[in-house]
Length: 193
Image 1 (cartoon, rainbow, N blue to C red):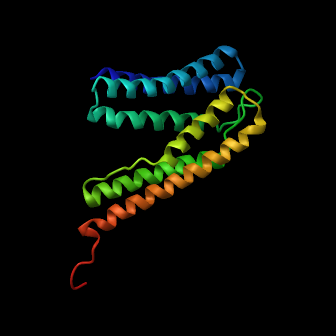
Image 2: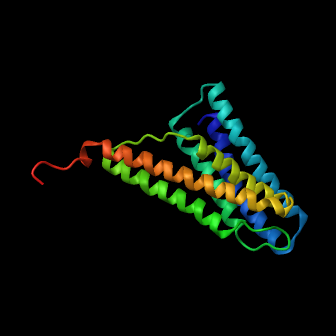
Image 3: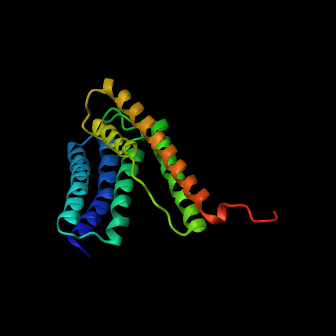
């Protein structure tokens, strides 16, 4: 259990606290809940960079960390997008359901695709793409924009941008996965069939 992995586990433990704080804030509008939600989300986001830096700088890369780090990212963003999709007005704006559906749909598609490739090929290669990283940044921008209660007039721009990049990255991952499947010998037709 490396220091980087402990920080990643802390990020995962902050997620339910964040979700509960947002729900309480949406019900009663108490500023203590808003501060707690913002603090949890900010801490989890900052720790994402910190655990990566520690893993690289002090050579603490591990198989557990390679699995936990992206899981923590996905759990934080998915939880934030889902909980902010609820109607918390007048205290917070809502993430549009079409953006929530795009994000969750892409992640479910990727998970199913990874399972299929793992079963058929035995191993898979995930090539991170710039558009996927941009999608993550834009999704975080939407969450922060809503959490920090910034002017709503720009929110539509951020949500559309996040949806387009999320959809594009999903299509690229599907394309990569189908290439891995088709390159494997089990995808070739059997002689005589």
